[in-house]
Amino acid sequence: APRTVLISGCSSGIGLELAVQLAHDPKKRYQVVATMRDLGKKETLEAAAGEALGQTLTVAQLDVCSDESVAQCLSCIQGEVDVLVNNAGMGLVGPLEGLSLAAMQNVFDTNFFGAVRLVKAVLPGMKRRRQGHIVVISSVMGLQGVIFNDVYAASKFALEGFFESLAIQLLQFNIFISLVEPGPVVTEFEGKLLAQVSTAEFPGTDPDTLHYFRDLYLPASRELFRSVGQSPQDVVQAIVNVISSTRPPLRRQTNVRYSPLIMLKTVDSSGSLYVRTTHRLLFRCPRLLNLGLQCLSCGCLPTRVRPR
Ligand code: NAD
Image 1 (tube, rainbow, N blue to C red):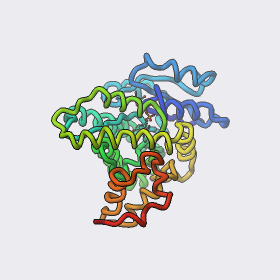
Image 2: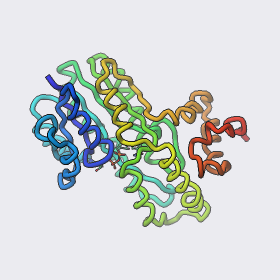
Image 3: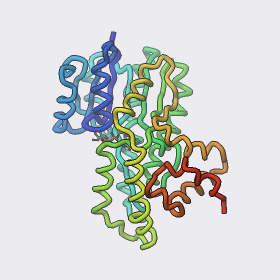
Image 4: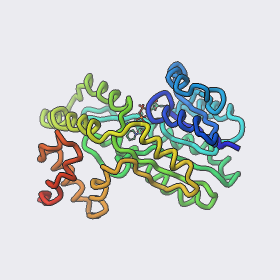
């Protein structure tokens, strides 16, 4: 029988692409429940699903921030959820001083507690049946801090700690956890962030910090998306491989261009090498603005990086 796959956040980006690809699986291994907070946005998904709509793909309402919405959605699914994909998420960038606590809590409510809420809802069934797979769209920012992404990175680190802990218990129940960690992906995600930033004034932030954010970080970030950004299709291919695997990995990075940066943390457990290198990339190495991460492979690093 096909496995029932429930995906959150399918009105755009990675969630939409994943729902469509799984629904079009040539071997028809999946029955996809593609969910979104606002069903008013379902047209793009339905158009992309084509003939799969009503066959291997159904669309349902689900707000990961609402207990009622989660309960309502799960009660409509015949049978149980075999694979849960926690994809819904949002970003937040900017100097900490200028961001409200409410905005920060909203990020945690969506990215972290949204996933926790769904897991609590599907776990009893998975445990009873002694099978299941929980996939989480984390980020490379779940593994490393990034300047001006403090709260977003913290929400992804929270996911990493939560699901790594849970994975140990769930091995006993034959339930797998997989954290997928993409670098930049070219979706609406970046546009939404930039729109947020273009109108935000970041009150209470000193001029130096604002200058670093607007004149150094933002151009560097745009360049990073342009130079090493992956397509949602590439990321989805990696997720499909994880879902179809008989022994799913706990972690799966999708962008090899990020391996050098991640390695900096493994190589130096004090953490200084990572912090100093990324500091230097932004504040000292002008090539970053033109070449993005290529700077790491162009030879100017790590030999020129010397802890001060
Ligand atoms: P996206 O903005 O296109 O998709 C995010 C989806 O989550 C949207 O459809 C949005 O409506 C939905 N969502 C937000 N709050 C929700 C809620 N309360 N309930 C239900 N749905 C909600 O961006 P994307 O790039 O496809 O992002 C998908 C996931 O990938 C996110 O978790 C994101 O953090 C992660 N990710 C993205 C990137 C990137 O650069 N785009 C990189 C690494 C990880």
